[in-house]
Amino acid sequence: MEQRRFVGIDLGKRTYELKIIGSGGKVTGTNGPTSPAGRKALYRKLMPADRVALEVCSLAMVMAKEMEKEVGCEVVLLNPSQIALIYRSLKKMIRRMP
Image 1 (cartoon, rainbow, N blue to C red):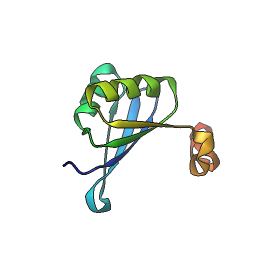
Image 2: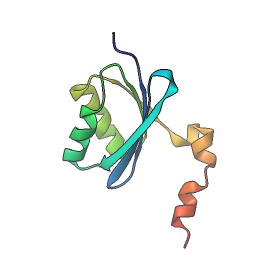
Image 3: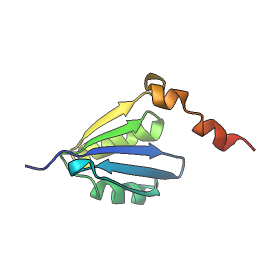
Image 4: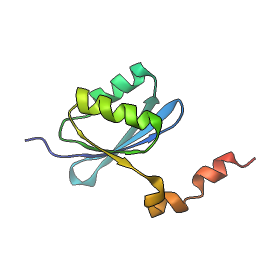
């Protein structure tokens, strides 16, 4: 039986950031393009036992369907306004400041 990993993916317009919490709490990460070829490469890194979290956006909806079909993993779509840590974060605002 495969061990369940927890995967978080932050989607940008052209790239993604991926973090995986594996056995013993070890965190690994990677990134890549959100192009169709980049997404296929991402899906090859996932396992059917994974639980993947994505922030809701139009690309996340597409990716959730693709992941469920190609990988068979569980996908959870997150509303950032419902997650206090994301909602209160100033990080995204700071990137926009000159």
